Image 1 (tube, rainbow, N blue to C red):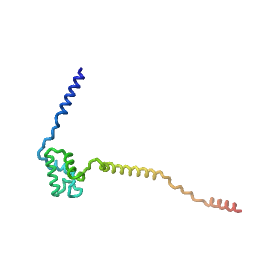
Image 2 (cartoon, helix red, strand yellow):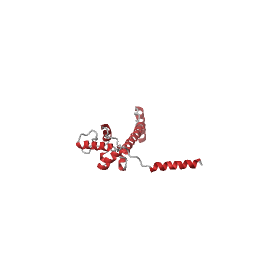
Image 3 (tube, rainbow, N blue to C red):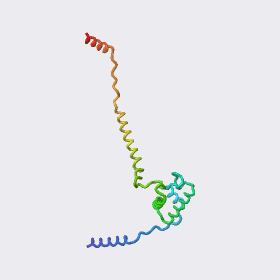
Length: 157
């Protein structure tokens, strides 16, 4: 009986939680320059090649930093800001590409190449160390030479 009452209470509690809408994050006011730069360092300048947004001095970057400040003031999270800029300007503005589609190769290929090169080097080093030194024949002594010469002369007689 207690188990049934517990299950009913748990079901009512879950229904009450599921029925209430999730509260949207409240606007936090004006974000600091450090908060804006923390987001901007993970975005690239739209004008300059491979320059992070937080250190670029172009007017476009200043506008983007202002836009980041506005989005953060509206309650956007860092990930939501990145998603917004990627949706507006493409994946090229992100300093760290998402691990989707072919972008996962960026994360897997370099370690795989390094690991493969290390294994190949280790195998070859082991082989080079274990390779036997070429066996040189001991120099023939004069007695051996003389004996062999006499054997050949005897064979011709």
